[in-house]
Length: 369
Image (cartoon, rainbow, N blue to C red; front, side, top):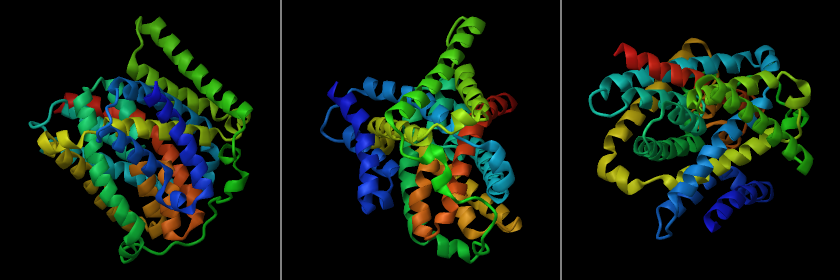
């Protein structure tokens, strides 16, 4: 009970702290949420892994649903063309990276096609998508935990690079950022305004209703809760209802979604096992590294070909590799707040696309090879 209470309250303190203390905002609430979970899971404190797993599994559909109902696909298609192009290039690059990793590690890792699909979710949408795809494909817990822990190690190192010298390094290859017609007025986005008790209840209620409908249809069609159907159903219905202006403009719905992302990160961090990774997880570090860094290199090459500017490349890559919650800290390091909304656009597109493509990719590559 105490463990669950700490995990449920911690995201609120992190969110409030980010508004009051600039150092929390600069580091990023997601990084601190992961750190909180990692400390809980890798210290002398004994935790109940079942509690962590339950919170993670509950947070996945709620976070994805809440972030997607606040998306404005029609507006982004018109205003954020450069960002969407960079996102598509990143999707292609990560897919190539996952294919290369699958080929290299095909006879060395179990459930390699599921790991490949999960890596698509991880590096196109974020860790919640990896978890969603893992649940849908019924990947075993050990593979999921080791892959996530490997990503924490590699992703943490790459994040230090992004926060420090990435802009200068990539600036030698890509053109500088230039003003565009893409909207950057965050203050006008209702979903990004501070929520109130009514809007919190409304946004969570809508998402729970979507989840309930998907579960109900799954039971009617398959006589069971089919994980693939439910995950893709929540993704599809959430995107569909986002076209309703009243639902899309629920005050603070995106921020409520970020609360569940932070809850997910704390829970997942507590399940990480660095000792196990050191003992038997070197292959997972290799697999994850191949997907991630092959994807980054190919994305960079494609960005050069299609003349994507430095800041848009970095913020799009960040949104895909880490999720929209990391966009703010990276935008601050770039000293360019105009890319925040475009970065969140890419991150939310990742949440939407990654589940479909990750599951389909796992099924296709598993049957072809």
